Image 1 (cartoon, rainbow over the protein chains, first blue to last red):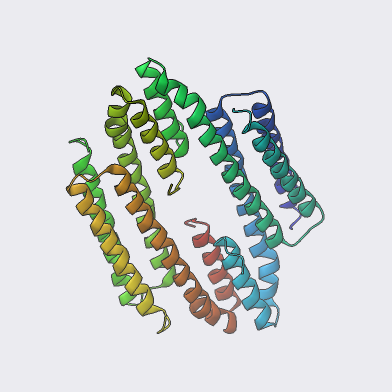
Image 2: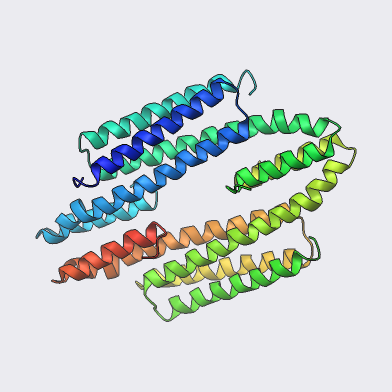
Length: 91
Length: 91
Length: 91
Length: 91
């Protein structure tokens, strides 16, 4: 991961972890279910945003390296892998 | 939350928290981005499953209480709230 | 469906149908795949918005009728059904 | 689009169009809202499957052409575009 991406991703992941720990406490203290659900949706939303950062970084580093290297098979593999992970498919 | 639901939800939330901590370690140790993405998707998938448990429990407890109570406004509010949270809307 | 909802839903459905027919023409005339994908995503987005109108109308008509009627089983069935369809589950 | 992909995509799009016309008739004839919602969800599900066919075809044709051509900028553009459309982003 690029130097400028990694700290940002780590910071956001830690925040999402804190939110998830908050959900745990809400359930332990019998907080209202709808509030629990909203907090879980917020964690999922945060993860989607972080995933986008990781995808962009991946495209600009690992995939880009393959695009510039001489190896056609590697390029094809990186693109195939990118399409699968973004479509939620496990090839 | 019902007695039989709460421990299950807590157990699953703790597992999701562990998975998220795993993602943090993967990023810290520069693991391959696609593996990080897949692990994040797995956390999101786990959260969706847990949310369903919480929704079912909510329907069978808080909402059901309103359906059996005499208060029409409360029934309407509970149903409106359920529709909004399941549609991802924040009224 | 309420008198004021039905024409709006029909108008939007016809528009979505037109968009989908547009996608068919794009594929027939070998338009660029990414443009086809974006148009399909637009149709899905339109359907999500229309579904919300239908959900709101359903809550305010069929479900509300059950909430005001004396029949507790019917109330429970309507709420259960609403939670299932909004969670994309086919009980 | 590849010769073997196009007819399949067209056939599925026509089926989805038929399903959407079915939804229109359901609303016109005041069919039960939950049945309408389920049918709309089915159309969305069909579109997601068709989109995957289009993505796979795009990866194996347009993107692959760029991967094999000498033009690095074109390769980068194709990959960037693929990541954006699969993340639902309009750059």
